[in-house]
Amino acid sequence: MIKPFDDEYFMRQALKEAESAYAKDEVPVGAVVVAKDKIIARGHNLTEQLNDVTAHAEMLSVTSAAENLGGKYLQDCTLYVTLEPCVMCAGALNWSQISKVVYGASDPKRGALRFESLFHPKTEVTGGILAEECAELVRSFFQKKR
Image 1 (tube, rainbow, N blue to C red):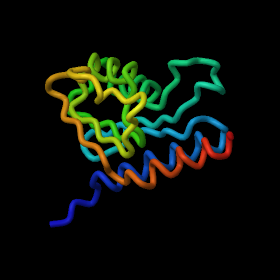
Image 2 (spheres, rainbow, N blue to C red; image 1 turned 90 degrees about the vertical axis):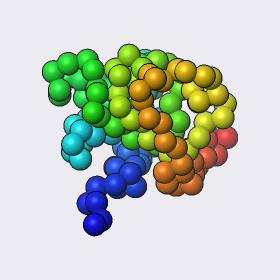
Image 3 (cartoon, rainbow, N blue to C red; image 1 turned 30 degrees about the vertical axis):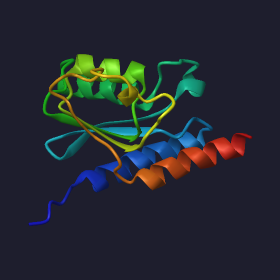
């Protein structure tokens, strides 16, 4: 049986958020939080718009998801994000006890996976979903800046 909503479907939703960030001249990273096959929060980078270095897609979507659920823990939720989370976001995801993180493109310079044990021990982490599309959006953004 084909599952109607799979990792690729939700990553495409996160990519839409990343495209919104790109349109606002923000680093194009987008995220969605999913619970029971339903998107409960969306976010994209807004660090320039809000003049806030913590306004990463993951941080904004985790805050929105917690508000939606009425509690700070995101057990039984999955975060889909177009770029591997940074150390700050991995720390927030750890505290949220999110069940799963699915990311698109790797971030060898700033990604949290170069360190051991930043995510909660029970959090499953999967990467590489639509990786090339996610990476191309970031590459395009920074080429435009040069």
